[in-house]
Length: 98
Image 1 (cartoon, helix red, strand yellow):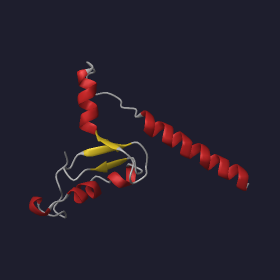
Image 2 (cartoon, one colour):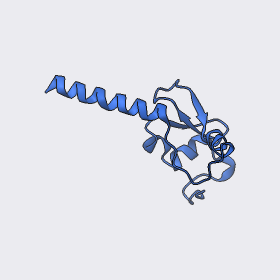
Image 3 (tube, helix red, strand yellow):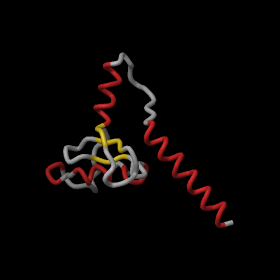
């Protein structure tokens, strides 16, 4: 884990939101990932704010229980389905517009 730089708050005032900002989670996560109040990274079923979510560590523990070894590539089916739907809808709008 990266250490906060000298331009970040000290550990006593560091928050979950500071971590999300520091790692750019909301930039690269496209709404599909978040941080829980406990500081856990969450994978969400869709980019909607109220979408169901699960901590990534729970997913990893389930994978290990099935005998999978780390590192592993994680493909979240709901996320992939949602991205394909979003992309398809964008193309349909473009076709209708142009």
